[in-house]
Image 1 (cartoon, one colour):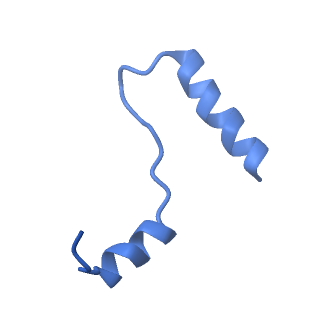
Image 2: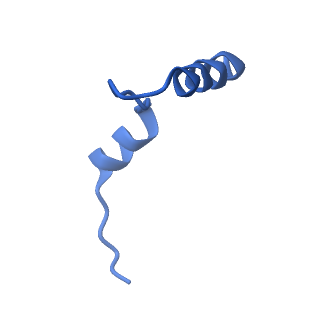
Image 3: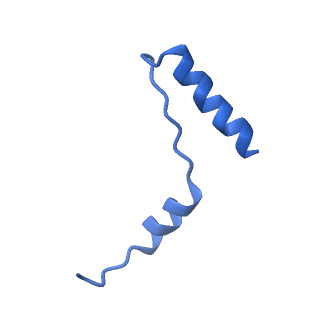
Amino acid sequence: MNNVTFPITELIHNEVLSLPISPVMEWNEVEMVVDVLNKYY
């Protein structure tokens, strides 16, 4: 295993929230994402 670090990448990884979004998402999938977000906050 190597000991390479990527500090900027690791910082971004800890700060960015990626949401699933797609024009082909079904309505129930959209609702599921919204429900999870609402429960988090």
